[in-house]
Length: 591
Image 1 (cartoon, one colour):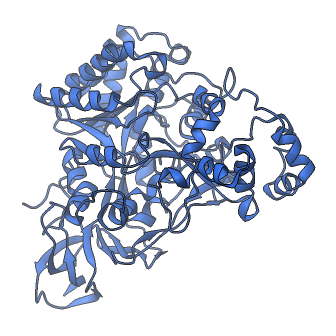
Image 2 (tube, one colour; image 1 turned 180 degrees about the horizontal axis):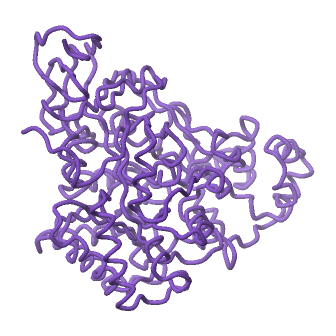
Image 3 (cartoon, one colour; image 1 turned 135 degrees about the horizontal axis):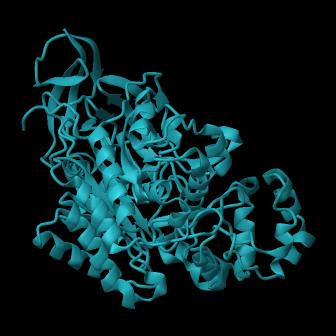
């Protein structure tokens, strides 16, 4: 008798092939059989009229701290994700010396907008080396599986001390030691190595990240740690020095390309369209195609919607945070601030002012924030209220700027009044990147590229500004069913992007497909009812920290290793999730 059987569902097996009706039998956490008339099981799940998919694999999350104290890993589990990859963008918490705990917290707080108070209280720090960190993670049962890349920033700080923080170049001994520790991490099960070179990534003190200015010699020297290994990937995030002028593009690309070549392993980087260099993404695609022709398995991590932020009085950012009069009440609770801001005299005083500068020495706020406020009249052409259900691809006439013109009121007054809606809980959505033309036609071009990977959800990060861990649900709803402003994708293609393609890139041979012998990570989805809920703020992090969460309706059942971890939107209490150790996972069944 099987442990569990899923019957009558439309199987989308992760390969991109058309769906077919079949049953799945599960035994010992693995898919034991696929077909019809499979025999009895202790529990049967009727999936008639629903789709059945492999569990989703998210290659770009930042649960590095959260995973050390949290066994739920929301919001990813709410959106069908059964495997999450951490350590992206070069930030993380191992290796680490006892004296550097605070530095790594400030780094993560600044780069990924995770409250430092929550990290101080939540992190257990029962590790020093990266293998120690993996061992600590492996001790915690959780809802889903996780895997971790070795991040460049803590590695550099561990080897170079204060010299890493002050952007000094690594010498030959430093590079040799970083290469040795990278090899040690890979042999212990790290799924890869990640570096961060973004101009907008800063610590909470406003300093550059340790790896942001690392040299070609350092990156290629570390990448050689992969020599002779049959597992692992390398990842990078870079703005290609965009804020310093496009003349540096070629040099920065060459450094990234040499890093990828030196590893000899699959490589990915973040791809998006930025308003102030609207054609750079096309150049990056061309360079990635060339890199592949040179023998590198080069991929582009693409988001299925805008890279955007939420602005609100309970969020990390909002348009009035630099206004002198607002700053006099900024320390108050939301309820108290809203009461003050509803006072006509207070409102009039705020609206008569201009914002102070937000970025600069000692501030983690990037210069981009000041640039946006300086051009708020233009930026507000991309200020939207999402609504319920959330709509991330809205036409220009829905923007707050357009509505202010229609109503004949000043723009800042429109923004002020909007943010006060729902007693100050209202959010304004600003699609920063991928929305230059105010539609997703270019996003579709990125997603359909054969070297594209679904990525950039940042699950567990930017908790006060985004909740893009909901992107898998968005892919299945907007891109296969709901899109009205352009062409769509079919369900088999989207499922492949969320599952099989991810597993192939990562070298995970035990998941990503519905095949006999593979791990029984499975979603049963009522696609007709599938829908993301509006984002909302919850105060559930350690030390009372808050984060944006976004639930979903339509996931009937999510299984991890054959156990039901989520049913009808509720966690079941099962915690079969484990740490995936690359190079040590059980290789399984055949195609």
